[in-house]
Image (cartoon, rainbow, N blue to C red; front, side, top):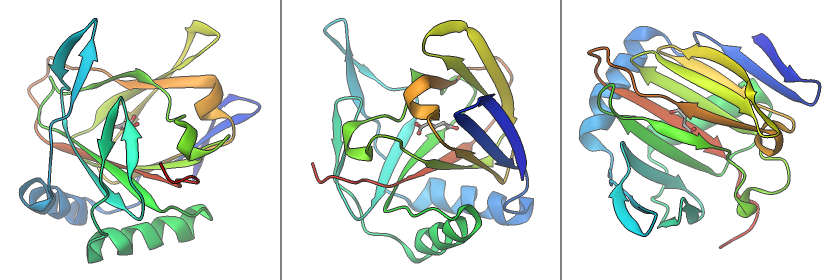
Length: 194
Ligand SMILES: O=C(O)CCC(=O)C(=O)O
């Protein structure tokens, strides 16, 4: 596990090959067909806009994200098995997963932190990336010029630990490269019911 310090209280741990390429390619093919995807809409300056990606929410509890309520769908066998593997590796516990499907280089995620109230004071997040590699960028909340960047490759597991969500934001920028599907799963522990 590679340790990438953002600052003394915020550590990222990266395991580049948590899942082998064959297994992760198979999961991308299966899940892009089979999971219950939605394209959420958010309000930007009073205008309703579809977010540039599809998502699905699985787990034990409902969740609110970017102003959208997700009713949790029950764990599938595969998702529950993956959760158990990630819990064993990370020594953390999770009761929900937000899954994002980036269909091409124009799908993306803007600057944000996974710091919703229901995740508690110091959310510990495990992020599993399958399919196309994408750039992932962190910036410090108190100094946006302080940035750290990494490549999230096929099968990699990134743990965002410590105070990362309180002190840093992250984003997944668009790319002009002609690329295909990427599926990302962020495992979370919801502490409070909505
Ligand atoms: O797709 C990614 O790697 C990032 C996902 C993310 O930032 C999130 O789900 O909050």
